[in-house]
Length: 179
Image 1 (tube, rainbow, N blue to C red):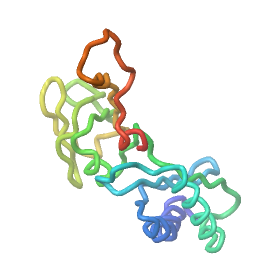
Image 2 (image 1 turned 30 degrees about the horizontal axis):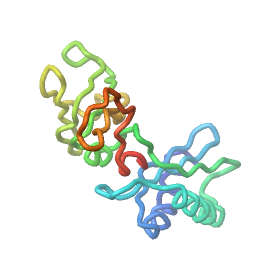
Image 3 (image 1 turned 30 degrees about the vertical axis):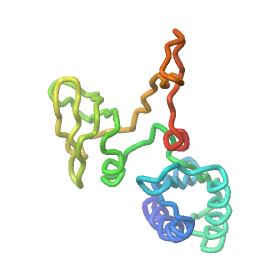
Image 4 (image 1 turned 90 degrees about the vertical axis):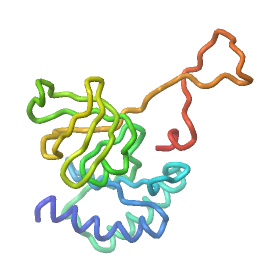
């Protein structure tokens, strides 16, 4: 049984469990004896996955996998969220992150550059459009070796609008903090 078949079977088993919790299956990975099930809240949610949701999802997914036994041999189950700086692999990952800063590493140079960073402006099944410092760039998904979102830290607004000469380390909103 190939890893792809295993992952297809795992996705089929896990999707209804995660959906019943009001969450989405973001991705599944199986490498080095670790089965990683990555879950997230639906796009536009006020917050990301919290620890209580992860714990419940872990118990329910584990029970479902123990019952169906889709993975041959021993493995370690890890149920997690995609995090602040999430990997982008599939077209739906890119569509979900339109408007955010992303960084790309390409298989081959495009206009002399193999690494790109900018705001993701558009995404469809085959390509993305990235606004970089030098202008908009259209990139075919099959040209991308690795991609991820970039969490942008910024100063927090000062209470009362006054200036105390001190800057804040972060301005994380509740939505960003839990992603």
